[in-house]
Length: 397
Image 1: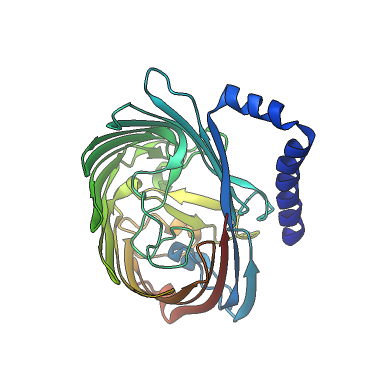
Image 2: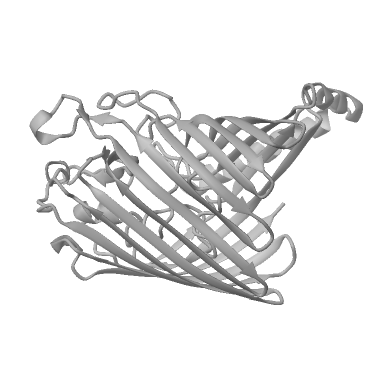
């Protein structure tokens, strides 16, 4: 069913674009595009992933309510493939306008192969390229570099030091040569997906982020601070009542490139609701997207770090990564949610990744990646290990 839905969505998208090109005369199509934009680019990539995995949950928080046997299984996926439209609009008194829509086939709501919008935003830039302003759903300024740098992973999951978030909001950048400062106001991360409406247990409080960064041909890096004054009602003693769980997060990353070598590091340190914890309910779990709940506790501390190195030799690139992450249940607030007593302890995850990538040409590459993760801390995490061998085939267009 998932493969069928994926193929239907992909064919429908290609048919729409092809049909427009065939049905509309060239002159008329050109006139139409000129009226709404100076340039429209269609791009993206097709990613096929296959290999063996013992099904270790990609989110270490799920370990508390996970009961699978983790038998090694054969997996295949093309859902990470991306479709992108970039629209360059007309200049308005020298200010440049741009729109962007980006989607993959990692949908939810019962069908993991549906086309899902990842980003959808409009941006404006001043004539001197000093100011940039973005409106819409865009990757947070906490994760502007590629998630999981030097790895083949496409999503920023917990356990490697990166924090991934994309929510509707406003971003403002000011550039000073190689330096920049930025600010961001985003919708609370616990809002209902795609609706813009908050779940009933949360108050309507956005997150605020400030950032400073630097970039040249050799060095690139940034440092950001986020404050989130959200409220929730999952406190067992105050069920149905809002309790303030204001939290903060300090995070950053940096890269040093001296060909053929490159080094990368990232890390974060946080407390409370600025770093939400997603759990699966212990009872009546109907699947990977059923009964998911968010816990934000101001007494929970968390930290993570990732260190990577890469060497490029001709068309080959070899990389290795070590990731560490820890999150604690400081007030034992998880117990009533997941059905187990954590005794206020913490989970520690260690992840090792190694990969080799071969660039056949600028559009096509092949990669092989090994991932090994171990959990420790709580009794539920004892001897909890997982590994995977995955082959990636990627064609960009």
